[in-house]
Length: 87
Image (cartoon, rainbow, N blue to C red; front, top):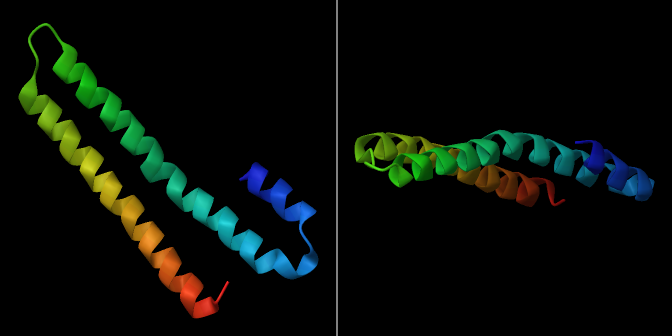
């Protein structure tokens, strides 16, 4: 969020709402994107074992997909919100 703050500081004052929205979006996306990376790596580790644990890989893949859905929802809600606010 610090980088969003720096970008916003360089913009003109009228763009404040858009900058706040970008900072909120970055914060809302950080958790699901981090989780996607984590569960993707975990799935790969389960499959790369000498004896792959497919059941565990499927469980971690299900978690990954849940976080993909969460990220997709954030994006969809933000696009809808931007259309309403006309940012």
